[in-house]
Length: 492
Image (cartoon, rainbow, N blue to C red; front, side, top):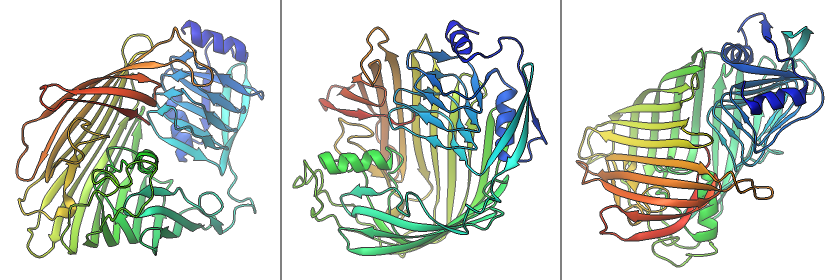
């Protein structure tokens, strides 16, 4: 136990000897499996009733299991943070390499921090804790039978789900309901999304079967505006940059139809593997970008809010899907790998049936002291030259290769790798936001229709906070020049 962990343990009044934690009944419930998995690896157990605060300048070098007390975390945790019987509050500066889980409470997130694993809230179940000289026995207790859990409830916050903002839809404001019987096996969420520029209401429905079971099903059908470029930054970041700077780094098309997937989750010793099979059938058509959407800057720029979408062919695409996700937090290296293969069985007139593989990779691990290395990769490979343009992917501009023109590179083949080496300047402590960080950047990628052109490489330096910084990036070949911009990193 290092000095930071020892200090936290002393402050909390935790026993410093061996700590044994037993979940009675075994891993029959998903929350129990998560607790058992964390307890099987190096961990610290803290109990009590008073609020536990983990400050910015502290480090916990193992997983942390807190029983019966609310927790605020702004520190660095090399493992999971699991709170039983209370809420978990993530504050700016938090850096958790594993999962953030609240059982019998909620996880309150922050956008100015990093969680390497899943963020889960098991609100309708908890564990009664018995403490016998450092031996903790946890007994499962369901809260779902409470009459306070209705069959039909408002989704999100009073029925309003997270909005989005972009140059083609303007404001997308979804509202909906959650229909869930008491056994929790079925959850149905009908929604209607108002899109301000189009002036339309897009109905949709999402269905989940056996969400807490190893074998579960997720399906969705309805009308929507789709993009293949959502991997390069989160919806929140893209919405903020679209509104403030007119920098919408995505291309879009309209789609109607449905998709369903059957998953099977396997968990063991900090590793989760979730393969799936499924299918998708959709009618796609192009959507314009006429510059009628407001932005503080760049509203009349043909490179920003006036930028047109590449036209997609109108027609139907039906396909089978297979893939999976691997999430590994068993060691100091945190890895998340997602892969999906789509094989079409019907496609738009003038194009060929295709097979397309898409891969996303996130890797994070500590190096020296508080320094971390983050890798983010994305790849697309396709078998046909005459692929529907609704399956093209793009690189260039803010979010991928800043020095390359916005979405200059695109097609059916793509490779991209971003490397960030983060060095906290721990000698400087700013109010509220904590220590600034220095970020070393290396970006490499290319995209094309039939094959990959020469790889573009860019190097840079960022100064700011862990999630928000100013970047100076230059073309490694010294042919395209340099760019200064705002860098945002939420998650990996």
